[in-house]
Image (cartoon, rainbow, N blue to C red):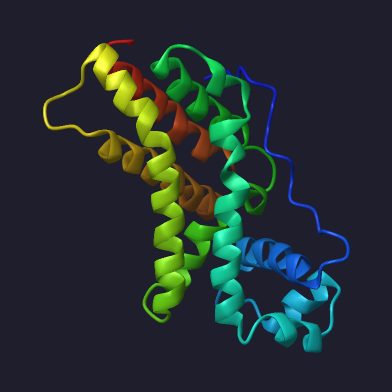
Length: 211
């Protein structure tokens, strides 16, 4: 697969002047690096450069920060559906393939630089924190809901296998991406994630007759 779009989501930067925003950015960084359970409030404060008192001024617990960070992660992902060049293409299948191509283009460098905060956190916390599980569910659902309109339009234009829905395929795309992240962690190598997304592109082309 060749990445055809040069635009990308700006890397997360620690905001100036807002302890709350710094803590959320630090949570994204630390949880992606070592998981939710292994990340402590002290580590988050150190990464954010704020005091523990500032932490508890904004959040009553690590769980409360995690929920806020999940919501912020969803907001951070919105440019993938609004601002990138492939979103302006006329053909809905081209937009869908462009989105997958864009996700492929991000799969380079250290694994904790491209893995998903939501996917990493929910693997740790889904059975121990219902608020975190629900926040992660909402974030994944928001991604799928944003992808579904282009899939639906592609189905209308090209046809699709019987019984397939736009939301089904959106969830499958998310599953492949999250699974690719997990496999990349097992080898500490991004190549296996890119391989998974390459197969995803082949699959999408095949079901819409673009093989």
